[in-house]
Image 1 (cartoon, rainbow, N blue to C red):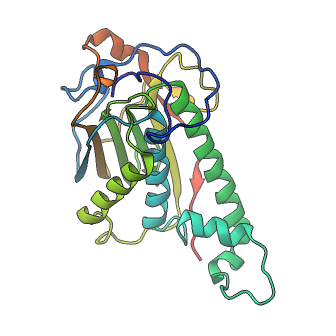
Image 2: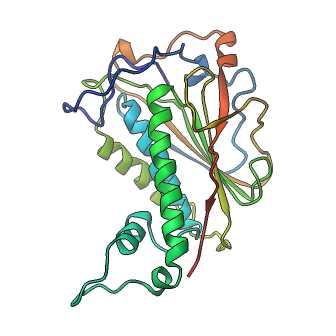
Length: 272
């Protein structure tokens, strides 16, 4: 991942100007597609899905990749009874006379749990947007069950190979998200897995230690778990990429400035 060459936007088209951000900390050399350094990244210990985008992407797109993957994993691994958008629609929309669509029983029977998980998840998504606006994020972990150090399942989004471009040089977010989920669908990584009971989900990610984020808690000595089922989603960019979106030269010392952060809220799954 390279330092952005200007303000990021969701796609190639113009977008409202974002508020000024703090000075960008030095980009970590480990955000390139080169060998892992400084113990920050470990070889994948399970199946992996690789997605190559034909150009640079915006930082906002990187955030969308993380948010959409989180929602997808929660539904596919039976921590939500419905996809996030449908769950939000049924839980937040009052019933009306003559409705053609009835609420699923799971939503009525567990309305309090539904409201709580939606509140927690929406808060998580909002705070992910904040941290992605403050720092480059080379890796995101979605940890299901157990604890952050010993989860039952681990899903990693690896953004080290992504080149972050300016607004004018970035691919459209919607097309990139579509390509990501097409690759997941083709890989068919969830179909043969056994259903999980309701459990907690922890989100962790890497960012610059001085990025100024307040909600996420730094975990300076965190080690990525080596046990449990793991799926790695590797994202990278290829094709016509401008100089402003190119990866910086590597210096091992810069790695030390990127640390793990943990979300202070555990997302609690629920069934019908």
